[in-house]
Image (cartoon, rainbow over all chains, first blue to last red; front, side):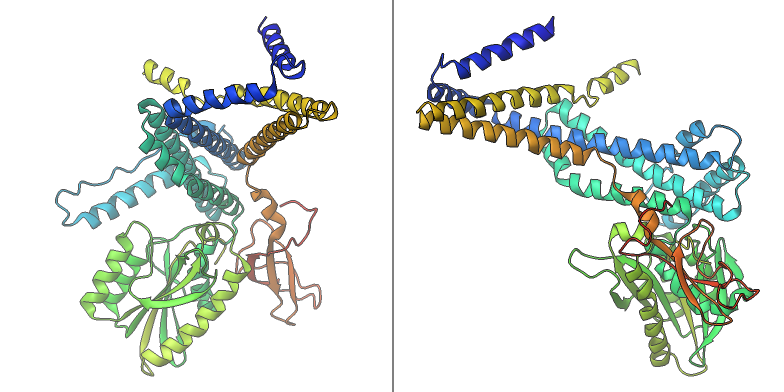
Length: 378
Length: 142
């Protein structure tokens, strides 16, 4: 019935336009007059409708990405478990870590540290028992994959929340803010899809360039590694006639380890003349990927607990703390490591050689921390 | 709870109306283009040009929107990254260096394939794994 109605309306429009029932000029004048009043009265509402439509499509795309990522993770997990992982995946990606109260901020870092470790333990134990047929590296990678999926899921839910809020309240401010962040959100979602691919197959990611520098400096001393903190290793070697202690996360599974705990443990026992941290850092648009910059301070990201521990211990001991940063975009940091970033690791090693010669006296010692996710790097 | 679910459903993304409007605009645009051409040929040049221009404008709007939807609803080409991730191996015995597609289980400073040059008992050392700018093998999958 409605098809006939549509057809008859279309025929009417066709006749009006073709059979010269009305002059086209007159029609256009009428149209412009009507449009003028429409825009005067409902201009903002129409603009909001256009923006909302844009947001709708973005949310549609995010949903498509989230669903295909979830299906990919479920398929991946089927390889390591006899039971259907769908329910398990849906449950794990909804896990939340409740932030500690900050009314009295004293000691909050240790509360955060404790909660983060408890949260990691819980997810780890569940994933490890579910994917019992996977080896240790695969289990670590699965944890990373689930984390990426959880982030993608959160991104989708947040966008949907503000979209519905904007639509419900009709607030132009909510809708315009949402539209403003839309390109960045979609770029991040694209990066997360790339990360899912990298973590599924165990490719080294851009963020791992700090760990790569550490692994290269460890060289053939790999048999002498000691675990000094959870998922974090320490190796002692020599460089330019100086003692070099190296800390990095335990590879090749996907983990960032706990370099803060490792530094606290080591500096309590041994004396170092210099601490150098190597990490990936976000570049500004226009900066070259793989460019190396230096500075002073703890070069480490994350929630801040590891940074706090390192700053606390080096400031108490009065040890200079230097940072070497390899610039990259957000996408490059979580997707497979590019050739430029891989080559930048050699540049960093040369700079470390120069630093140890310049700042550490012969016979002295330096502690190098290779920060970042060590996936795909021993 | 039920109420909340219903509210969410109300705001679920429904693009069928949008496609219908696009279809209608396309119909009007095509009609205007034909009308414009026929008016120009019958001597009403001004009316014909206006009608034709309006039709082209409508047509461009439809094409722009369809292209926008296509871009928004397409997944990023992450799967095409596969043939670009390479593993660089070096033989510690003879120094032979080779580059091949990444295989699951490869990791930097792990052991790779046997050296095809000297057939050394020790497999080659994986020196690097990275994403190349150009595709290494176009037709192969992961």
